[in-house]
Amino acid sequence: MATAVGTYVIERFDLGALSEKDVRQIADLYNTLGQERVPEDPVPDPQIVIDRLRSRPNMMEFVEWLARLGTGDIVATGSLIAFTGDTNQRFREVGLSVLPDHRRQGIARRFLEEMVRSFDRDDLVLSFFTNARVPAGEAFVRRLGAGETLRARFSQLVLADLDRGLTREWARLDPAGYHLAWIDGDVPDRYVANVITAYEAMNTAPRGTSALEDWHVTVEHVREFDRSRSAARRLRRLLLAIDDRTGETAGYTEVVYDPRTPHVVNQQGTAVIPSHRRRGLGKWVKAAMLERIVDEWPAARLVRTGNASVNEPMLRINDRLGFRYAWESVQWEAGVPAVRRYLEAGGR
Image (cartoon, helix red, strand yellow):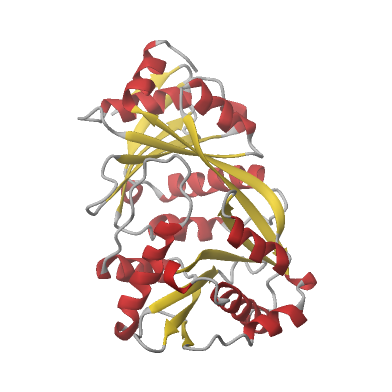
């Protein structure tokens, strides 16, 4: 069902049912907003964005809306993401993507009205993410009454400036009682339990004042992550540090790389199990990964990573390796009653 707000028409949509023209418009919209957030990046081929949209993991349930002009041009999208599983069922992640020339026209407010109307419970927590390079996002979430829960620092390593002497030294640390295991493609059966332990180690990362619960990873999640990554044509390198005695994961790091955007490698999680800390495992796996990136992907110019601003141990390692501040992101949360009050007050 479509409704109007000013000169815009708001529609709920299913990505799989959209025309190719509309999907291309959404990809172009996301590319435009990506340039606002990271103007130093080249604009990716829209097909890359389309591939990623169509390969989203199925443990994330999307409800989505778009805003059109009378001409049919898409100028904004809104998304509400719920997560399957037995944790964080009260959480919904909100995405509000409005082209700059169409902001402050009531579109984001209208998306929120549609979202709130779809709720059958008032105990939900809505989560928003803003980028310091786009002040309009923070201004909006503050107006609707969301509270800041966590700041994250995004950093970049210029690979041409990498201290290879340092990375080679750290890659040779070889702490007693541990060995490394590489996973390049889909996770082999013999390592699924290790990968689950690795991913769940991210529950030890700082969460600020967020109401998020620990995430519980399943075999199905691991397989679905693999399917989604493969369908988006992204490569992965996952490195496990394994305890020789128990065979269990002691630490890990993971990166993904799309050869179609060859300039950047995206760092995913890095974590060391608390009982294995202070043995140099974090330095070991990070340095071994960087050595491989440089040798295997010579077209890559940057490694990009995000860490909670209060995660001092990981920030120290990254700083020593040459990562430098690029921008800041903020996570915000708001309860449904607060959002309802904002909407009832008629705010924009």
